[in-house]
Length: 317
Image (cartoon, rainbow, N blue to C red; front, side, top):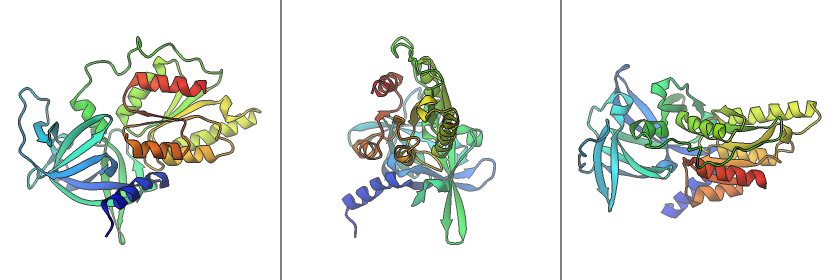
């Protein structure tokens, strides 16, 4: 049998191979289809999975917040994920998924946990923003022999933002600093599969006065960069004449941020470009992988001041 450390190391090393592990779970019957659909969340975001403990209701809490639990001395809010997704559990809320990302810890109540599957990011397709009211970033295709199942990968960032809207603006122009002036003709290539993340990034880049193109996947960013490189060559220049730097998420359909960064750094045409990884997946393991694929900087979501200072530092280098 593998030791716990071996399993952790093996799972962590997936990040550099365009693979990841998806926790599959069910929320109950969908209000429209009447079926019990399959949902998923990246295992990297799961801190632990526990049987549903007693929950303390909180007066005046936000809609779909069941209350809080005391988990080994930490008070954590518990969100009713079936209600958020428009589902009705058949057997009740039995499992609590404790998640940790974007500098926050919270728990989601679900009906049942089904499996953990290992996938390549090219098995995951980007979903339209209208899907599930914008709460689904992508659709994972899971092969079971000759059959194929589909799992909806939830956009937990958007879900949390809707339930707990920030008290302050995401971007404060009084603290983000002066606008950044790029060379004429340069822009930023940015990519993130989360609707909320793209919105916040766009606000930050606009506040800094930066021209940009915003994409949803690493594959889209890779294709765009190669197109721009070809255009630059025709003009007698290089990709650096078209792009100032690349800003990328880690978790994305088709091609993740680790693979995108490694491909850029190993490319003769694109290798000169600085790459900033902007992700809700924090921790030393991910930061080690960021360094191993050659990224120029890593900044955790969501703090526009941190992002602005990181961009300034990278451009100075």
